[in-house]
Length: 391
Image (tube, rainbow, N blue to C red):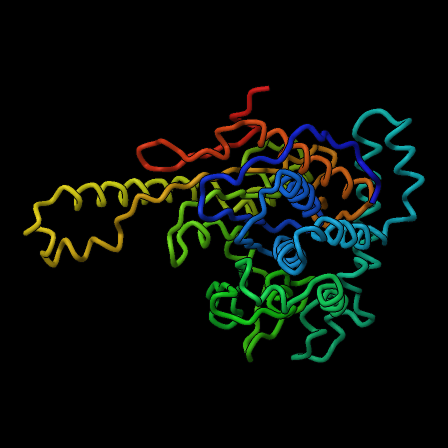
């Protein structure tokens, strides 16, 4: 992966006044290096999460973070992203030409399409290899009959770059989401309820028909992004409410321009489908949190003899004064990236995504309100540097 210029203008501060720092990683294939760059900036600021949750490529990044000590996490992420960008090394000379001598987006778009074609034909190093026999020529009922790629390389990569004993040790909560194929139900594999192995991460990233279903405890799973591409709701409404600073790192923007061509329509369709309405989840959580605060205030103001009424007791579990900062870090794609941006693994694009993730996070952390406890009536503060930033 080429070294991109990074804007290193922030420094570490005292740990924010939140009991929990959560890192929430959306799915998005090759765009996932944006999350790695965002994590590098958070690590430099010593904002180490105590809960990391991911979906699809976000699950893979989460495993590399949770499966290594803090001082090694960025290096392991960089090693992974350098390896997966290896298939398109043949384009390195063209990448240099595209960035130094070609004007406009057309040459870069062509380069991206070539890179995506290489990944499609040759697979992605350390992640998947194409099957020699296509699915339609394979025996019905076999794994090969339902997918174009073999993901055995991903298992080896996860075992080589991450320590699953560390993940299960309990120091850092870890969650990944997947969909049970037979029931259609969404499932979270969480260190509070499961002993996590490579298969749980692979299940979260098993996007059909490219990748095969993954068996976990006798049942088969596909990519969690089929139902929800972000684990934000799982973190916000988990089993135990805590004062939480959540960094939500999205790879698809829900906002975008009206398409002017079929290719742009396909791109916009993907963005809407996989953005998973992050803001809608946040808005709904804000409504629930407002009710929790109101119930807590109501119960506190009741006379003592009313507090023992069955109705009052029924309300007690929904009453709290916890606070939440939800910090949105959202990758905004450039027009030349097109509908193949999530499987375009060129070294140039991977490096750019990483640099943008780093710089977006640096810019976000310049705003002191990001790490302060909110003083709003509902106890929630949201921030998106693209919308709320002032520089």
